[in-house]
Length: 313
Image 1: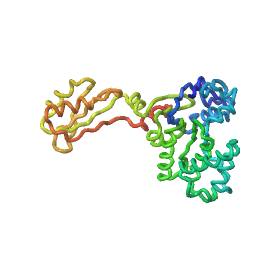
Image 2 (image 1 turned 30 degrees about the vertical axis):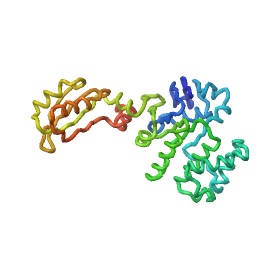
Image 3 (image 1 turned 90 degrees about the horizontal axis):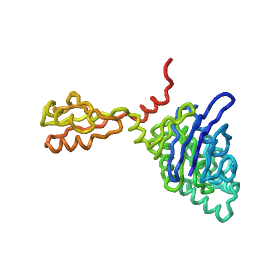
């Protein structure tokens, strides 16, 4: 649906985005993850046609953002980090105004206002002034603004910035609902938000894409090694090691202190290889009592820090 090729942006002599190329399929919830200043917002603004690239191309269903920006903008609903709300308007009045600006026919406009109010959970505040709303509800109004013309693509820049934990969960669940029928692109530097919300993640650092894939695929790719920690009753360490060290994918078997009076060990495998099923079957087949069974892998936060921390001088 979206093709980005060689996208580059300079601000004067400062390189903000450096030759990013990526394809985004219809129906994906894509998270742009990176530290502050990584190039996330710049990339989003170029995608939405609000900022011209220095080099590179962006097309939406074959339509060029550079050649036909208005045609592309009609396909995109955009919520910038600071939602552009007229706070002296009522919610209904504001959404009606936005719909008219988007040239929605009068009959269709009323229908869309009802639809976005229901989807975004705004039905109870439609006749309140925006200035009276909590930050979470203001974000909902901003998302409703982005949705009013029923675009195919929603682009959300830091949609949970400044929200409290309960509001973050509410907006996160709303994004998941929207992702059932829309292509959603959101930027964030909050790892937990992206991991639980997005089907695919791009990690950007210093204008480069340094990782691309599902949360699980990224963790598998960059984990290096994973450790399976187990404790078993009914066998000593030599017997346990003898039974498990020869299983496919097991690199090392090391003793660990037992917690529940059994025999404990740590089995190391490659980061992209899951040995848990084979280990479980081997223990079950010998009728040993399994006390604990825990997979230890690098978290997305560990990987993010590795990929985006500047090397020390």
